[in-house]
Length: 177
Image (cartoon, rainbow, N blue to C red):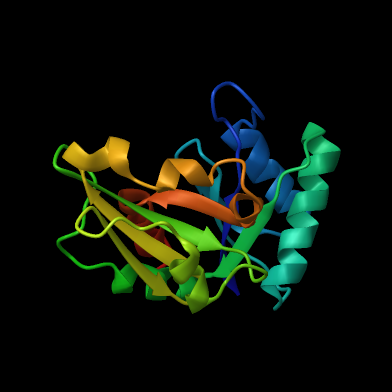
C-alpha cells in the first residue's frame, strides 16, 4: 500500500532537526519501500506491506524516537486520501503574493465537521472548508494579521493537527500517482 507520512513539528525554527536522507533510512528500516521525501518539513512518500495507516504511523514514530531521540507525532495517510483531499481544494485557491491557502490535516481524535463551528472564523476574511481528514483554509494576504489561525498554536486541538501549504499538498498528491 502507498502511504504519505506527515511529521509534525520537525525542522521548524531550528528545533527537532531531522535530516531527510536519514529519515528515508529510518522509514526504510521499518519496512518502507521506495521511500521518498519532499521538502525539508517531514513529508514522506513510501510503500509498506502493513495495511493499517495507524500501525504504520506507530512504527515510524517508534523508529524516529530510536534513531533521533525525538517524540514526533506522525500522521500517516493512504495515498488515495491525500489525493482526495487535494482534489477538493478549489482550483483558484493558491499560496503566493495575493493569498495564502493551507491544509490542516487532522488526527482521528479531532476529525469532525463540527470542529469548524468551534473556530473563530471571521466572515469576509477567512474561507474555511471541512473535508474528512482536513480543514482547507484560505485568506487574502492583506488580511493575514487578522486571522484566527495563529491563535491555534498552544491550544489542545493544535496537538492533533499538522499544517501544509496548498502547494505542498498538491505536489504530494502528484508524487503518489
